[in-house]
Length: 230
Image (cartoon, rainbow, N blue to C red; front, side, top):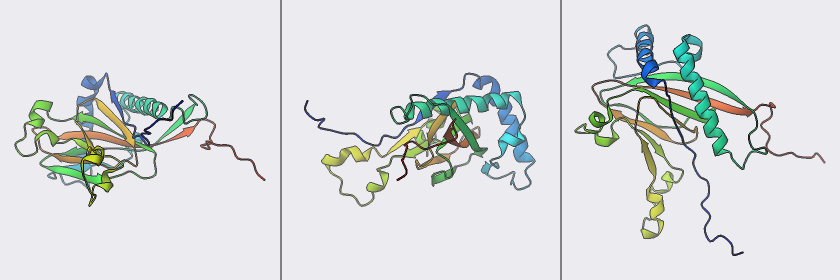
């Protein structure tokens, strides 16, 4: 058999999931988050951007919130299992998922979150609670279709700075992916993946929930390979 003439290596997994109960749960979350912001002594009530502390697991005790948390953990679990097919020593080992932090953000009037990654975890996620409808959001006269999207930068993005670009490496030029904010949509991504929240301006605030998580084998060991001691 002839060898494969092309190897496409080091893919980047991204999970997208839809919360079936979003229409019932999201309006309640908007009220809860606005109350938390209003009672936060650190917060400027007139500011265009607000980020809560990452301790929402300990601060919110509502069945609807717990429903959303279960959905986010299930979405993460599905994504992790699919991303690691053929890599784990067993087809589907039991998992322990540790949520390292959950927080919400409220943004408007052109506010944004610059390019960053997340540390001390292997996976992260962003869930959209509220934003302008898609047509209205895209119709912004200055920001256009990029208004409020989450932009992910591929691993080869840093090669574009000063690189020689020609027809032969056109594959490098698709360097980022814009994911539209849709209420009820969860996006799960590797924590090392650079991303940013693009500037947002709308009739309603852009409200999202983010989380960081680590994933461990149910046995308590994350070692993939066995080693013998000499």
